[in-house]
Structure formats: structure tokens, C-alpha cells
Image (cartoon, rainbow, N blue to C red; front, side, top):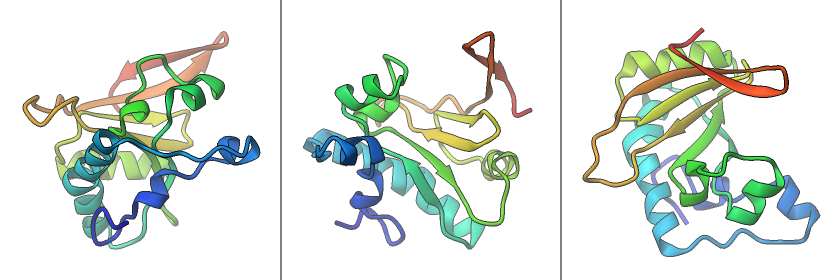
Length: 150
């Protein structure tokens, strides 16, 4: 199922952990609607501006999968409002800064551990995006977030 010209629903349903367990990710309609909103408002405009493909490394995570991989209890991935992304030929730092310069209506963009970029939209269409930019790192076994893109 196409969500936009450059993104399919299947890209957001890939999980190595779920595959190992023989479990399919079957999102409810409200999750599909959120994934479509994420693509239409943030990822598709980003893809066009970049002029190159975006790889979704983590998309929708049902609660059981999110818990299994140690995701945050309130993760936007569980409602289809977030995706972790990368692009070929661009460092995650450069990608995060590019997103910021585009001023897309992302609620939150996190440069995570210098390895990928987390993009999410607000909880509802009636809630303005915060356009928050953070950097996540680990210290003493804990994830720490700081304002800005390091």
C-alpha cells in the first residue's frame, strides 16, 4: 500500500525481532493514518528536498515489540507517529541538520546516538508541531537528551 509517492506501508512494518518471533506487524487503521500523516507532512517533502531515498530502519512498533526492544514506554512509534531514518551518502548528523533547515512540521527530530535520525509528528492534526531538535546519547547506561543537534 502506497502512503505517498516514495513511501509504502510495508517500509514501516519491517522488524527483524518480529520476524525472528514469526509475528507480523498488523497496524490498526489509526496507526496507518498516522503513518500516512508522517509521510505526507515530513518524510515525503524531505525525500523530495534530498533528492535521494530515505531508509526507514524502524517504523511502527506495537506495544509488545516496543517493550521487547527496550523502547520508551511512551514511544511515538507505537502510534505510527515516528520513524527512525537514514539516507545513503549522508551522515545522520548532516541529515538531522538538513531536516532542521527545511523547517518541516516535525514535532520532534532526534539525532540518536550518532547513528540514525528519529522523526515524529504531533499527537493529532489539531496539535501544532513543537519543532523540537534533540541529541540523544548514552551515559552510565542511561539515555540522555540535550536540546539542539550536537
